[in-house]
Length: 115
Length: 114
Image 1 (cartoon, rainbow over the protein chains, first blue to last red):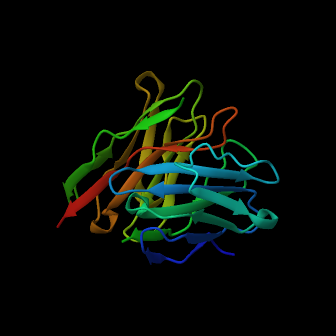
Image 2: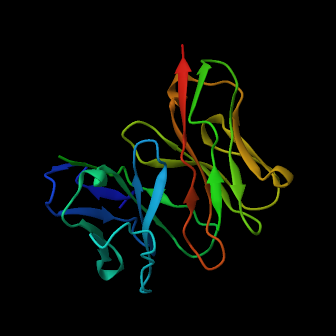
């Protein structure tokens, strides 16, 4: 596609429910990142996928968070048993991933509100 | 570990005034540096990037940034701000050896008065 696409754009869920957030990266981009943006907190790295390599999950805040990337393209971030502190904007980005100087292209984000 | 500091949470300028947003980084080698802009409700858009060579880099929308190794800084500048520049600005340091994950600062919110 022309850019990174995320869905839904907004999600309101009840505390304790599970949610799935979707990211469609730019076609041909091998690297995919998930970040979380909380109010006034900047961007917090969550997880990184590169091609067929094992993902870097070092940024996931708890075992309630998981992500997968099917066929090296679409990625889904799953949050189980959501808590109010999970409320944030979740941003996905992709890059060519072929060198250290490649820029990341961001989607518009999914705004998650846990009530 | 690499880190990025944006010391100003908010900056307020008048339309037409000059702008400088500060960014300091901590990095063990030659850094790859980026500035992104995020308009309300939007994702992040790359303004400019520095990898090597000329330390003054030009970006889109009339922005420029200067890499100063001695000060570990990569400040963003614009000579004359427009009301449409009101947004959140993020400085980032790119992947380092062994890690392909960019690190972002907390952001600076730019407010433009008419």
